[in-house]
Amino acid sequence: MKRFFLIIFLLFGIQMLSAQESPKLKFEDKHVCLNCGMKTDQAPNWEQKITTTDGHNFYFDGARCMFRILLDSTKTPANLDQILVKDYYTLEYFDAREAYYVTGSDVLGPMGNELIPFKTEAAAKEFFKDHKGMQIIRFKDVDIALIKKLAGKMHMH
Ligand SMILES: [Zn+2]
Image 1: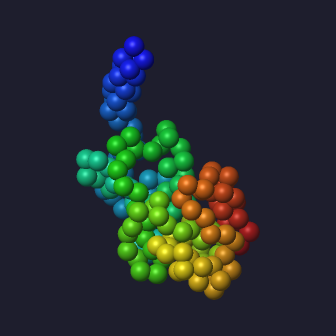
Image 2 (image 1 turned 90 degrees about the horizontal axis):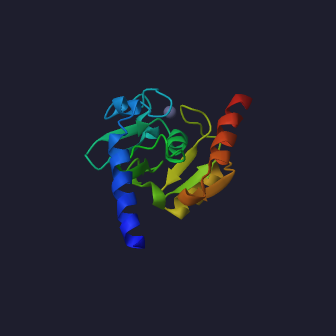
């Protein structure tokens, strides 16, 4: 009986998700930040992206904007597939969940203070030391409080 309700719930849930053709989808595949609307190909080194299961890309002009969307389930595309960030040194895309992010450093992105992604912990530590980082944080530990803190710090420059 429990299983039956679960199936009903899942079917209903999937229907809800597919019906949710949100206006945010107009940014699909364009190099425009899904969060703030700024062009992302003007600063390609900072460009991050998420992909959807139907093969489209949504771009961001920094990891901070990306987390703003990922931490808000009402804004995250329902058919989210991969979350990819660029290693600051190599500029190669890799899985955002595996990244080491340096926050609060003296290197600013187009949107100011950033979470700067690195593929290896060693690279993150080196950058942290060279650029006066505030902390090194993993994907799962990033929360909206941190994002707001980084956004707020922007006005002090
Ligand atoms: Zn943005």
